[in-house]
Image 1 (tube, rainbow, N blue to C red):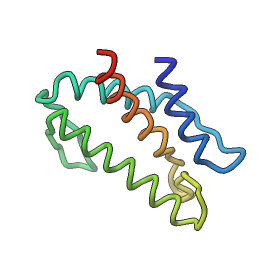
Image 2: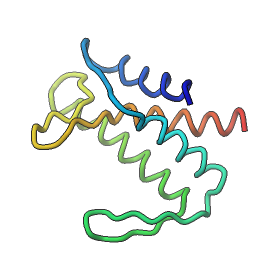
Image 3: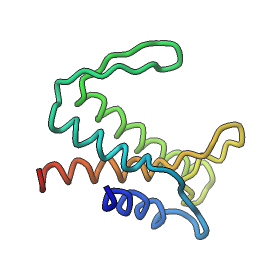
Image 4: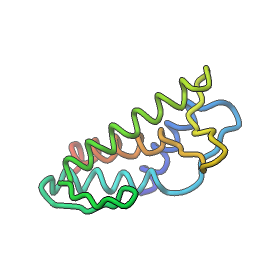
Length: 115
């Protein structure tokens, strides 16, 4: 778990402007989700998006999270004309999409190489 936190937050810090910080364990959570999705790809998970309940297989959930993290990282960097990987909309808390992406990628790599 410690290595997951270091890798996911490290990716964020490498690509973020100087003085950026990240708080929380969402990268570790994404690592664990990626490992579970690789180990049990047909297991079903339920989410509520807004008010709409959705059921997805673990593999499809992993793909959706990867897509969301990639698009979030790309769009937040583009919207400010610089390499900033924050959601700077002051109406919502900042989301470090690169931490999530790093956690997902690390979890998939860890499953393939270690487990």
